[in-house]
Picture 1: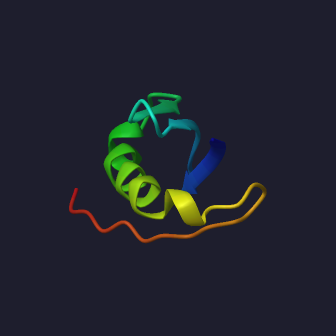
Picture 2: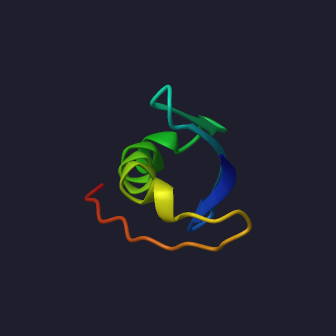
Picture 3: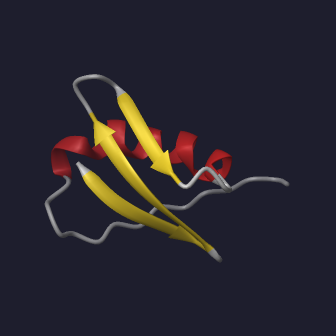
Length: 63
């Protein structure tokens, strides 16, 4: 599965390989902000996601 994620001024492209348990996120700038919550979201909701759908989730963090 491939998709895009944006948060504030950041934007990433990701590739989710469920069977391998691998999440690839590019570019690396700001990747630490999104990779863990995105991975949890994908693991939990993988079977519900449809191609071309728009999905939202909330990230809470202290910087």
